[in-house]
Image 1 (cartoon, helix red, strand yellow):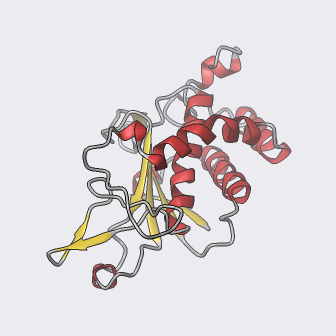
Image 2 (cartoon, rainbow, N blue to C red):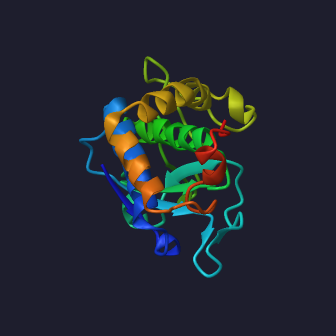
Image 3 (cartoon, rainbow, N blue to C red):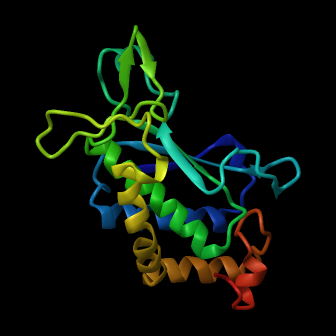
Length: 206
């Protein structure tokens, strides 16, 4: 599993990127998906022009789904995506941000394991957020997203159920602690790159 940063995040300090890479690598390994050959494009609401997090991405916490970099012709033939886009709102307290990223990586596990899939209707690829099928235990039926409250869908229930435990586990790992300390020592303190970092330094993070 490989993480790369979007052009929008080109100006993000490397120390901050190292933290997100560490969260990604540790969580993927914990979820048992680190060996998959998929690629994830990290895209935040960081504004490279103003160096601020302005909420450019219209989401409260985060989201993940197939990237349009996938070959549309192959998707129409039924091939599943191998490139995903991870959107993350950086204007969140430290632990909420880490939990949000872990939440989306649980969804990534669902995608690569075939629980979540794209579909084709009338020759067009069905956007995953309109009609995401989930195979049941016998694999002979699917639960459509339409008509079910977002938080009550099986895939969201699973992600919400695991995110906080994963975030807690990640922040206790020596590799993560080291990356975090290096970021602090380097002076990475802007809210846009490390959310609420000033509050974190004062021990006020949630």
